[in-house]
Image 1: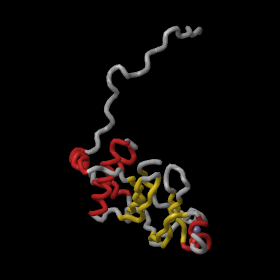
Image 2 (image 1 turned 90 degrees about the horizontal axis):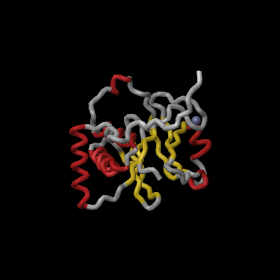
Image 3 (image 1 turned 60 degrees about the vertical axis):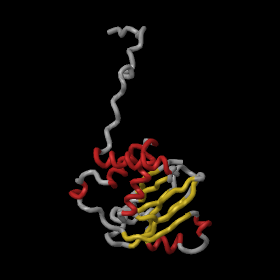
Image 4 (image 1 turned 180 degrees about the vertical axis):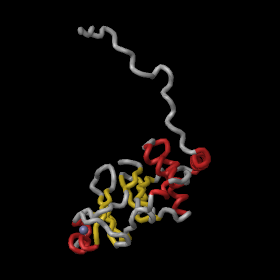
Length: 193
Ligand SMILES: [Zn+2]
């Protein structure tokens, strides 16, 4: 399975496709379909009542459920901000670089302590602890696998996180010399004009 991912809050009900209104109550369901990731589904109150709320949870197939309040996206002006622990975590997850999994985990724990992220669920998948965090402002769900750090690894990772927060995430290193563009193959057919 994937170590981590972010799943955004839907803007429409995923059962009936009706757009959510600002401040509307909705329901988030988590499904474990034995795929790479747990799947998030957001549905309106009416669809929750008619399709999911009754009967055994196992039969409906979801492993977790909670209720939220939809908030219309904030104006784009809020998007311009300097790197914070949260934007750094988002960038790390985007990069999908397994080297940063421990740093991502530490950042998520930091953000939970600062009450930026809230733990919604803790599950075990493939023998690993997986935390489902929600950013209540945006409604994004962060799925973070516990890398099960040993105490002697913790200090190094905490130093890495401090360095990343201080200096930001460096762009990918340039290709080392000798691994540039592929050489032009020999014996190319001569193009006749
Ligand atoms: Zn609906």
